[in-house]
Length: 585
Image (cartoon, rainbow, N blue to C red; front, side):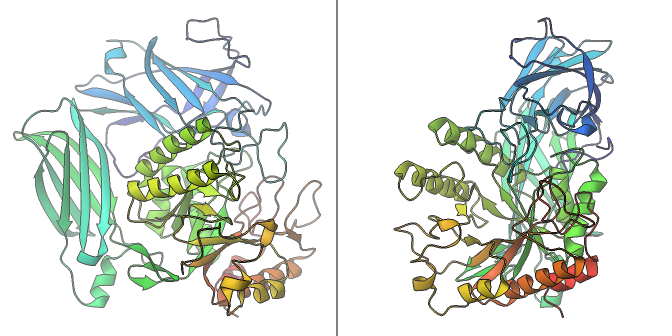
C-alpha cells in the first residue's frame, strides 16, 4: 500500500507518516505470551498491512494461528503538540505498546482505533511499537464475514485474515485538535450539516472556521464557537433554483460532484489545527416502492463485490487497485456495488465518492448466536457507521445477511429481536439512509425487501416475479432456499423490492478448474455472455424490482462466478458486459 495515500480521506493533515512496511513477526499459536517482555520468538518478518495468510505479506501461512505479534522501530521528527498512532484494522482483538507502555486496546476486526502516544515517546533515538493480535480461528461468535473456520476455503468462504490488514500510521497534531468530523447533506433545503469534535486540551474561546468550495467557487466561509469540545451547525448553500444549475451541485454516479472543505481551529487568534475534507449534496430515500436519489426514482444496478485479491486477501495490493475496482464496476455498466460481508477500506470509499459509485455497506456476520456475539456486532457495527457516515457514496446499511448468525428467525424470538434491534439502532445512528434489517429472506424490520434467487433459468425467474398478486404468490409461499420472504407479523408494506443476489454464472476460460463452482456454468464465452444478457434483461425489465445486484464482480478463490477473473481481467469485453448490464441491445 503506497505511503503517499492518506488513510483517512475525509480528515486530512499534512504532517503524517506511514508505518507500513517490514515488521518483525511471530506466531503465538497457544496465546502464551501476554506482554512484549515475554520470550517471544521473533523468527521472521512480515510486510504490513498484509495479513500473514497472504502471499503479499511474505509469510503466506494459512494454518490455524490463534495469536501473533508484530514489532518495529520508527522515528518521530521533533515537534510540538501530540503524536497520534492510528491502526486502520486489526483482526480481531488488539493490544498495542509503544516503548513498553500499553497505549491501546481494541476489539473488532474491521474498524479503526487510535491512541495518543506522546507521553510514551523517548526524547531521542528510535521508538519501538509492538502489536499483539488475538484471533481465534474457530470462534464463530465473532463478526468474521467470509473468513473460513475450516483448514481450506470451502463453499462460499475464503482464507482467514489474522492481525493487521489496514494501514498503520502516525500524525502530529496540536495539543488541541480536530478529532472527528461528520457531514450531513440536507438536500431539501440545500444545506450541509457539519459536526466538529475537538480533543486534547479543551479551552475556552475555541473557534472553528469552515470553508466549502465547489471547484474554485467559495460557497461558505463560516466561523463557529465550540461549546465544550464540539460545534454542530447547518451551512446554507445558495439554491440556484434552475434545475440545470441545481444538478451541477448534486452528487450522483453520473455526476459525482464533491465539495472540497477546509477547517481551521483557532484559539484567540492563534491557529491550532487545519484539516482538509470534502462532502457532497445528495439525498437517498424510499418513496413507496422506489429507491430515490436526489428526489427522483433511481433504478439500482449493483454488483456483489467480495473485496478479495488472490495474493493479498482482504487488503488491496495498492491504492491504484482500489481505484481500478471502482472504475471496472462503472465500466461494466453498474452504478453501485454491494460490498459483501466486509467493511471496506476508507480509500475504496474515497474513490467511490470521487468517481461516482453507490455502495451498500454490510456488517460481516458472526455464525453462532449468543448474547456475546450480538454485543460484539453492536459494538463493531456502531464503529463502522461512525467511521463511514460522511461518505456520500454509501446509500444503504445492511446489518444482517441471509439470517447468518440468527438462523432461527421463524421460531426464536431472541433472533428476531436481534434483527429488529440492529435495524432500529442503525436508524438511530443514521436517520438519513435506508436500512435492510436482514437481506435475502425472512425480513422483518426493513426499508427495502431484498430477495436472493439463483434460479439459472431466465424464463422461470421472469414468471416468478412478473405477477399482479405479489401478496399471494410471493409473500404467502416459500421461495428460494426454502425461506419465506417476510416473517409473520411483518407483511410487505409496499417497500421497494430489489433482487439483491442472482446470477452467479461460472465461466473458467480455457478449462474447468478442479474444485471451482458457480450457481450455474457456461462452457464457452458466447454461452456465458448470452446467459448473462438474458438474466440481466429479466432483472432490468421486471416491474416488481426497483433494482438488482448481480453475483458477482470478480472470481474469488473457488467461486469462479465473477464477471472478471480474480486478477480483474474481464472474461468478456467490458463494452459487451456494460451493454447487457444496462439492457442495451
